[in-house]
Length: 327
Image (cartoon, rainbow, N blue to C red; front, side, top):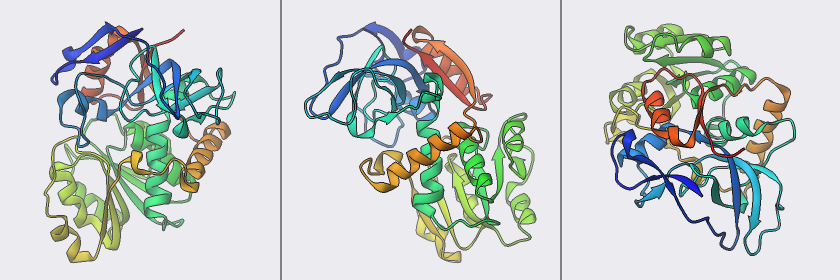
């Protein structure tokens, strides 16, 4: 099969198309004939060797796919060959014509969810759902959420899920123009951190109180400053370090306002739990109802994986990029 392999960490040029053996499913696993693979910021971190969860190289890139089940491993009973599914294989393998994935985490796609959308929603929308409902769980209509990198896939999903629940959303972006889609999806305010003082803007918006929940994927100095715009007993969720490692003494940050802090990794949500099922059901229902949009900004062939990464790293994308692996 054709697959995109990375042998050594570095720039986009490290993404190489190669002929690889077809994968074989183990117990509790399936083989998926991949239709599309989603591109996430974490992919660029894995490629650079700075992803916070250990990876073993060489590896086939890709942590989010849609496609059709083509082979069952021993003990798999929850799906059958021919089922249309989406999933995120935590060990990679998605940038390929075939991919092995655990059966427990498979999402059966309804007929009205096309395969391109199937590869574009799982990580962003389910991360958004579990931040709002599983990790935090205390949001009420009228509360305010701050979302950094609001124009990215997770930011857009958080915006729509929160607005639909009656929550006010404000966000930050570092790229002019990326405020358009979140504002169209119901965000109340988008702050350009390149030209505005986001701390002052957030406090002005909340009349000095601070937000109830802040979600950050920048890390570095942005996360450090976010604690100052979260209210007493408020919560901060970190989901990435796109700008670099933040200040490490989190206790020093949360102490002045008795805040709480979570560093979330979607793979730590138990896929056999009621929380996981609730998230999948909520997101699929929202997509089916039409109020949760999954914008796709570009689709690349497998041999275009390096170009896809370059485009994502250009910070101009307000939505999802996909690789097309199958017919």
